[in-house]
Image 1 (cartoon, rainbow, N blue to C red):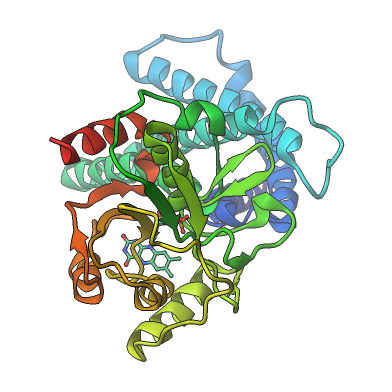
Image 2 (cartoon, rainbow, N blue to C red):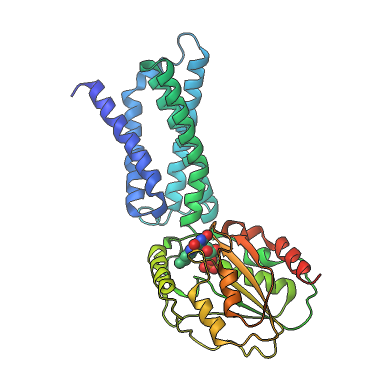
Length: 363
Ligand SMILES: Cc1cc2nc3c(=O)[nH]c(=O)nc-3n(C[C@H](O)[C@H](O)[C@H](O)COP(=O)(O)O)c2cc1C
């Protein structure tokens, strides 16, 4: 193989590895770590093979295009270094003892570096392509590169958010303005956390928008329930099923889909407090398949809500309240108030909205 062929071969592998790493970053596995190291070694070889580029840096004219090329390579080089260092600090398999940055900071750094490297890489490849392609084709390619970069910038954090728990300080998150609420309140929540057999390693958990405070995993509905309790006081209880859901998000959605198709009433673990003493039941739940999770239907069936007000609080991953409030109205013989609806990613900054909604309910 001639030197040129080796260069092209390594470049293609580097490109493939980079996109493969971005694609599997969500699983953050041993393979991701090993390939990250392979990428780094190949990148050093790539630079050695192209050392002529660096040796020529001091020579010739500096056109705008040349300067842009150097900046892009610089951004890429720095991003890769940050990627590698933060990767080592985050490593669970290859370098488990090298924790020189806190978990949360290092993840943000790794993600930011991945975005910067992605953008730089796309423009680097594009500048090379400019040599072989002219006119319309080149403009189409530039357009495609822009679309890829923008989807990377917005897509990577989304993937990250979807697959990894987000660290919060629970106490700070739930703390806020107190609201005067008359009558006795019971806050009942149903959450995936508390009803799921999660693996011990919190970061290995996959699934939408889980929260954690230090190493303690928290359900979205659970955090909302605690926010509400912080605002209006009252007792708090959780709906728990006898059968736990599996740790895998996908499997959970399948089981939940089956329960829905069968309109089943999953058996609940224990009786919740007697409702007689309460005037308001705040019911916090996630949207499942665009509707009410069946364990919440089990709760509704088990109790008499006559003379009580139910306040639905729904958390979702983009589907709003779906038809869950209508289903709730069909199951409840009490009054169902206007729901409070929150997109899962907004929960850490939702405390003020909780205050406003609760104030409005009492107007
Ligand atoms: C089984 C299942 C089904 C879901 N279905 C939907 C859905 O149809 N629409 C939606 O926007 N979000 C859906 N989600 C996302 C959850 O509503 C969202 O992540 C919620 O904040 C989770 O709350 P939790 O952590 O208290 O369980 C679903 C989640 C699960 C586990």
